[in-house]
Length: 217
Image 1 (cartoon, one colour):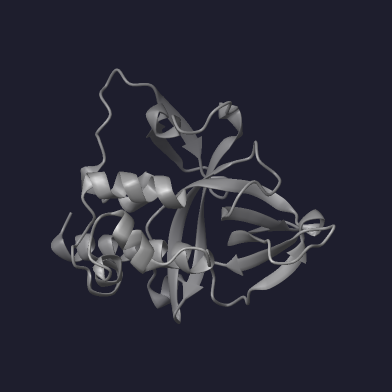
Image 2 (cartoon, rainbow, N blue to C red):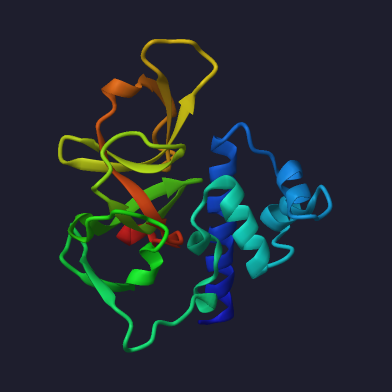
């Protein structure tokens, strides 16, 4: 991987982490930095300045456990463990174009009672900060209702959309409200009754943002 590609990949990791933390109002960078036994500005500097360029393994593990964020999404591609030839691989076809990828089944170890045939893969085009990106997503169709504050795919007719869902616990309502924050900045956040959500699936792996050329967007 070339240095410029590495930098784009590292920037994408930081951007995903920042987006995730901002959607969870109970989280803040200062407290999380302290839980990593670092100075108060540690995670702020990591996200805004890229210092350090990526989090060490132990810090990734602690942080992912605290905020319930997939550790693989915090880990640069070149630090992922390369599966051995004897390791079981799962083949997934892109639901949009039938292109196939293979992933190690060990990546799903944290997800219990999965029906493997309901784990699928897609690649969506999204817009952020006036730029178009492609993002690869592995999702779990075993889950079609709100489980926890996390990334999900919502369905509207034949279209699916990447969003972050968080439960609003500040109101004592019979039907709980869910805050929906689309990953694509073309769409505005909104609130909706939990029962009115049409959840396509829960995201279990969110890839790096890959910038698209204007003619491909």
